[in-house]
Image 1 (cartoon, rainbow, N blue to C red):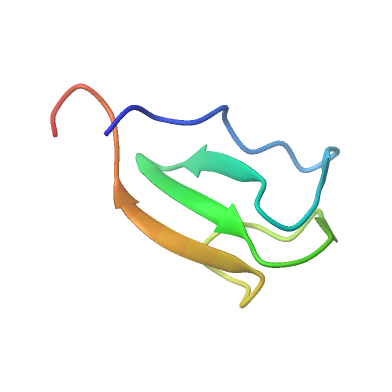
Image 2 (tube, rainbow, N blue to C red):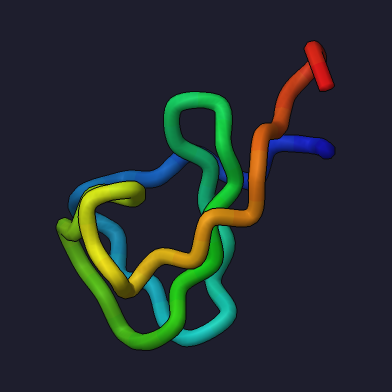
Length: 53
């Protein structure tokens, strides 16, 4: 899969927003800001991304 735009702690994401972090894609389930993907329930892990997959 192609990686989404890299997650930024200062950006606001809303339901359906996609980001990449540490080589994985995540989709936001609701409004979030400064919640690191992989450490919060707000992010749904969509699997690995990048050139190696």
